[in-house]
Length: 134
Image (cartoon, rainbow, N blue to C red; front, side, top):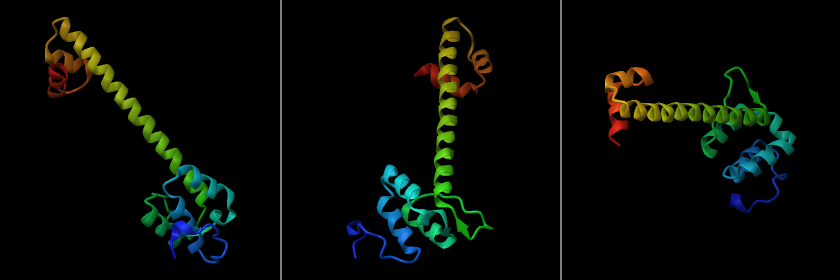
C-alpha cells in the first residue's frame, strides 16, 4: 500500500483514516485546511491519533493532558493563529532592531559615543559597535 496513491479514505473505519489523510496532505497547507474543515470525523480525534499525527506529519498540535478526544479543526486553527502571532512578534522585534540601528548611525554621525548610543537605543555596547562597523 502506497499512501500517496490512496484517493478514497472512506474504506478505513478506524482512526487510521484521519492519520493517513493528514499524512497525505501534510505538506500542502491549503489541502490540509480543506480536509480538516470538510470532514466531520476530524472534529473528534482520539489522543493517540493526534500524537501520531504530530510525530509523523511534523505538526505541533497542542494536546491537553485531560482530553481524550481532540477537535482537530479547532486545534489546527489555533496552531495557525499561534504561528501568526509568533510572526507578528518577530516582525515587531525586527522592526525595533532596524530602527535602533538607524538611530545608532544617526547618533554616530552627530559625534555621540558608543556608550551614549547604546544607552539611547537600549542595546549593549558590543551590539552597537557591530552595527556601526558593518
